[in-house]
Length: 212
Image (cartoon, rainbow, N blue to C red; front, side, top):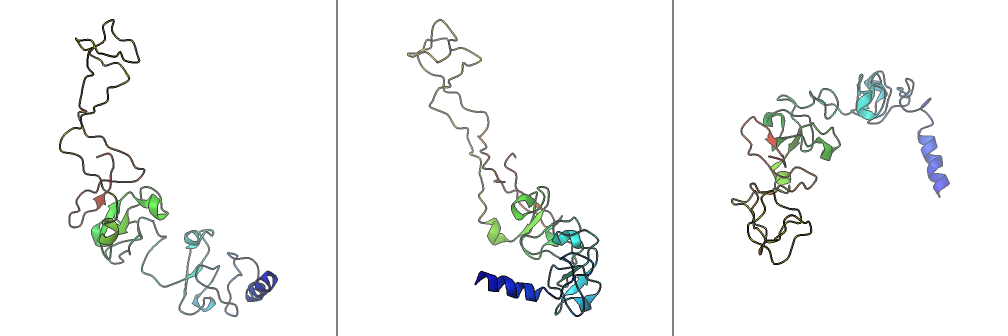
């Protein structure tokens, strides 16, 4: 059965001379599908596809390769600085945007390209339903006091001995009780992805930042 599948695939591609991406791959008598090239004009593409010039890098080819693709107002490849703009807005998960007005819906979120297959510094349009599913972290209003003493010696030894000495010898007379020292700022746990969403203002981008 597998041999028959490969046989019919071979027949389907038999009209294409050379390999995918070569200059003679698409012809009027053997039109190319979406993402295929090289083409010279729209007649070498199937259906409503257009021959987009010098966009090979968007489809894994040499930048000079012309590729059959759906008509679009976007300039450049997805993730490029000019892909989203006011006159050609991006959909959910597309980038690069630099303003909320570059998105058809939702907001432009800064520096989350990694989660959508782009470079880390790429800004991506996200609709509100996706934003509501993102984990967020709200810092506590007051510092957390730990009930467990530290295993490392403190910078200022206590003046009273402890009932059980620390693991590291710090004083000749251990203190009688552990020191409860709260942290000066809430602990920020890095989950490996942005967790804190800054409020969005009209025309501005949101920023997810676990360190702010």
